[in-house]
Length: 42
Image (cartoon, rainbow, N blue to C red; front, side):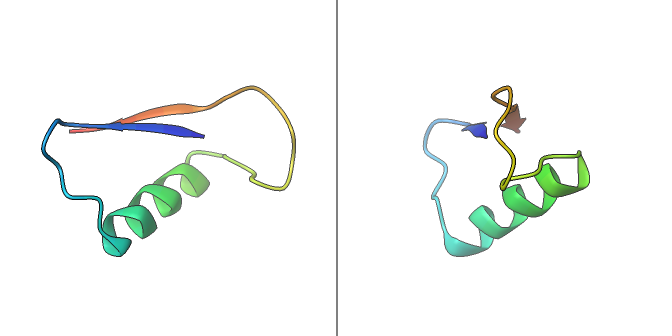
């Protein structure tokens, strides 16, 4: 999984958790190999 954030965004533990939860809800399965999933956080 790759996530893009706006320049200057502070990468905090809470942000990481939010991004992972969003990816899981969108169908990302971290334990399974596969196509790279790309997300953008505005």
